[in-house]
Length: 227
Image (tube, rainbow, N blue to C red; front, side):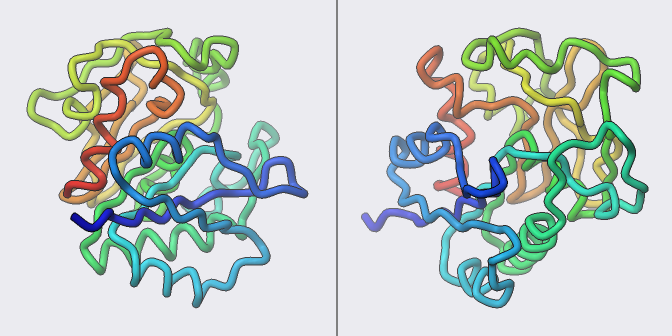
């Protein structure tokens, strides 16, 4: 059987390097896919990136800095971190192209936020200042730190594969999923932890960093290459 090719969108972090956590790549190899890394910064050709979408089987949006508030119609504040408007521009265009083609899209952490912004949603720009604590647990990034509750029968429930707790390394989150996506998982404090639509899934946690702890977290990557 021919392996599916997945475009993995990556950003600049630090600014002089393109980088991605190896867990995304390892997870795709583990489920039989071929990862194709696509740097989506200032040097990227939008036309060629859209050509990539035309030739792959799925799209994976990875973590990184904050989505530019301008992408969802708001002004940038002092608490926004590591904004890369060039990356946003390329990734939003690629998400929209993937949706038009009907290929599956998976967004993780920043990826769920970018997915929501691309499809008409809005974000919480900074969770602590909005009254939500306990979501930036970088020291424990490879183990679960809080509970998450997903709607029965949802893609989010499938992605958890029976797990009830996740890791958490984010200070932004989806506020309103917009007209196309539906929120289907939440933390105990009400923060949205997953959004979805037919062929699209965004999760706020980092399954790629939980694989050594619990291989059930391969589930969203299996979904991506089997949809």
